[in-house]
Image 1 (cartoon, rainbow, N blue to C red):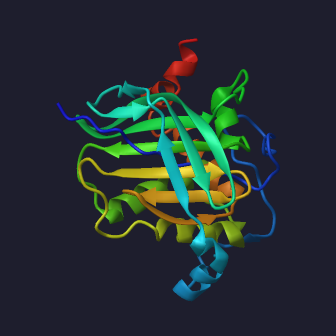
Image 2: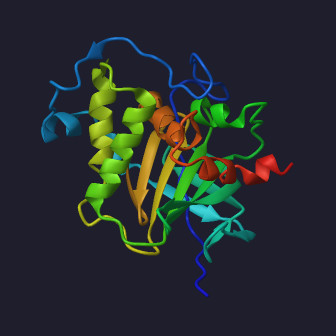
Length: 251
């Protein structure tokens, strides 16, 4: 039986600690202004790299799993119940909210685990709070099969298009989406490898691919859009949405 204590990651937004990002309706991503026609914008690699603060390349992300672990919903992997996350700028304690499997046809692609800052109240609509909340949170993906980078980028792009819509978007959001997608190389991930999305207030959105961390992208709208892929009104999987908060729903 395969067992793995899996690391997780943490992400953050810039909207002030402890609050919720403003937004219209539950499960929807907040609107922005200064829009651009996404069909006409093709930023170069130099343009994308210029968006990242050089000092952020020195940033680090450490995850220390707690002693207790739980078994996944549909895999043999073991995941930490709690974890301490520390970057070069901030730190937070996370607690697991639940886990579930993402299936494609009859095959399990990955097990997804949701984490949120310990002690945070998720309120009457925990899904919307996770999408828009300005607190430390993480989505961990433990893969059960090989997936190439093109399919990973395509899945994220399709998911963001669905939750953000295909209307004109702010220039910064378009560029930050391309920066984020650029973290996933063609080699993709193998069976047993991981992807973590981590949001740390004041830092931004960290992406970690099989333990390799990339500089944070400081765009709350991008983070909200990514979390809405799993927890929005039209999630990638209804069963996965429910199971990733199964510990919360069981209370």
